[in-house]
Length: 194
Length: 177
Image 1 (cartoon, rainbow over the protein chains, first blue to last red):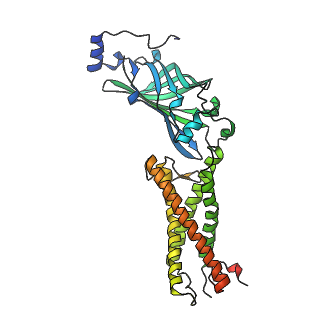
Image 2 (tube, helix red, strand yellow; image 1 turned 180 degrees about the horizontal axis):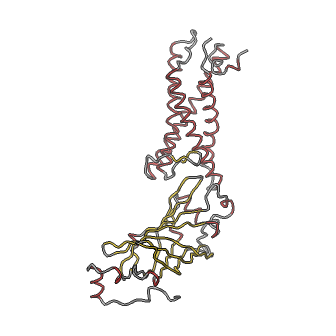
């Protein structure tokens, strides 16, 4: 389980790959593995004085191994470049990379590594895993939906990130009346078959 | 002696008080580095602005249905015209300044949530250039307001001290002796 996911490749022949891409293959035969960054998005909504403020990350990488027919064997990691943060304004971006928040110099990335994945019925699933931010590791779970279209898989989900558990927004920013502890993180990940 | 109604007087001084807080707050808060205090001041400034807008709407409706007392007989016609124009401009600014602030906030990507609980719709999508333009509009309208308020106060004092008429007293009945 500790070995990297992507290397657990089934090494499809080019002919099989072409078949996977262009034929209407039954879903269970497809393993979604290749992140399509241009069709993927990781965003978040924080609450400042009761005002929902949208933000996001422009750069992130992921390795997936997801077969909707066999979710239990699926493994995923996602790594976010925290310096690519868009927190709503230039001023906020600079602040949020600073020591009180992400502290991107020693901690440039946030990482999620799945430990378990289960089907919730229909196209709904739940990923559990370890989230590492600013040197702290916490177990989280994120429900998501999975849909297939045009030969690609789309994962859409969200989870609540409690910033103070990770020391995000320390010092004077610990006041949750100004900036709420709970941040909604939303993801929309598009992956192609390996 | 004809005076303003109690409602008009209360609205006038309430709005004046709120502007005396919101305007210096608006000037000071932009200079601050990003901090919880800055976020609080921005929120409070917006709440004050929305409140001024609501009170100004009431004020204009009240004024439309309750005539203001006539100017003193002794006032020259040009002064009456100037006073009416200035009052009209003040009413307009009480509405336009909060509106420009609300639109600016939307264009900068920050929704206005009145008192932290009542979200106002964003009429504009996030647009950095438009946000900057509206910030300039909001600022310049405030400069006009500040200039008009100075003239407004100076005129009131002049009526009271120089002309010795009832123009100030009818808006400030406690002054009467």
